[in-house]
Amino acid sequence: MSRDAQTGTISTDIPARLDRLPWARFHWLIVIGLGTVWILDGLEVTIVGSMSEALKPADTGLGLTSAQIGLAGAVYVAGACLGSLVFGQLTDRFGRKRLFLITLGLYTVATVLTAFSMNPTWYLVCRFFTGAGIGGEYAAINSAIDELIPKHYRGRVDVMINGSYWLGAAAGALLTLPLLDPTLVNPALGWRLAFGLGGTLAIVILIVRRHVPESPRWLFIHGRDEEAERIVQGIEKRVAEEDQVEFQPVDEKITIRQRHTIAMTEIARTVFTLYPRRTILCFSLFVGQAFLYNAFFFTYGDTLTSFLGVERTGGYIAVFAVSNFAGALLLSRLFDTVGRRKMIAGTYLLSGVLLAVTGVLLGGLTAVTLTLAGAVVFFFASAGASSAYLTASEIFPMETRALCIAFFYAIGTAAGGIAGPLLFGTLIGNAAEGGDITGIAPGYFIGAALMIAGGIVAAFLGVDAERRSLEDIAQPLTAADAEAKGS
Image (cartoon, rainbow, N blue to C red; front, side, top):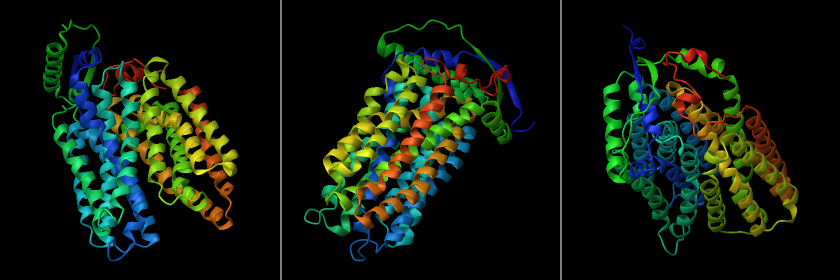
């Protein structure tokens, strides 16, 4: 029998039992053990962006040129894109837990080794593998979170966790102030300590993550239904004892044709032929949010220093980052109550319009008013951007979930991290030569247009996934009647 052949047919109530759970300490374990990776990503990206100048001196840094610093950014993005695709496929094949331990381990090792960089080549290699670890994390973590969090809380938890990237960004911006101050820390040591702190935090998260179980949904599809049952029984027992609740039998069951693996051809057919509207939706959301953030955030630091007379940007970036997290935190509950379609379309459309207005007013803004304008725009945009990850992780069948997240993450990361910097870097360079800040406004308008387009697509093609089980939103490919659904 081939490895992707059926191993048996079972009927299970595990999804319904996971979805009926009240919020409990077990779910906080998931949030802390899995969700904190976005804080690491925000910390990583912000610290690296802030310490570019510290890496240039040959005596205290690595003697990097401006071109090599730009190359390091591109290498990180390439690693993230490749890592998401490779680890996304492996996550669907070998399980969520195995891969979210491997990807965090890879990130930890690469980050610690970066702190010991002795030359540009070492640094570039470490940046690639750091990116690969982070890219793989997005696929493994989003799929695991959605499969373990009850349906009534899934939207708010996912949006809030993805928005926590900005907690890391704020922390990174503030950390660079003392670490890169030569009167406080030796310049040869400060940037190395910054990387070391990221690696230390990752080790703590890795210890917590070991206690997060494998996804029971993944287990019963892959012929390990007895193990899935033991895990769910353990969760129910723990929640019942802690919250003094008594669980009754559930009526909802799903019949599954178990398989060890699913062929890549079947996964591709599912994404592009069975769910073409959902594929268009995710593509629009990811590209829109990627260009929006690069239109403003990629040029933000340079705009403050080149046009508005700001020498140290850490405090401004911290304010911007706090606003981003506040938006994701405060608006997240509405994705479960008001609904996915309305909230996704609304946040995309509103943030796009507000960014366009900021572009029109750009010539009259100061460092403070530009920061305040950005804070308002991205209060709404951060919730919208986080909802792109939520959408990709819940509207495709379970067997393709991690790979779909990886695929659309790679598209968004490539668009934002490669095409975005090329376009917006040219705009700010030309504007700086002429001393006219309005020269970067076209970048704002492009980002705004793509966000508005994403909002329109969400309004027409969005999926009303709030408070619905994952199996109801998209039946597993292995479900007995899966062929009957698709959109």
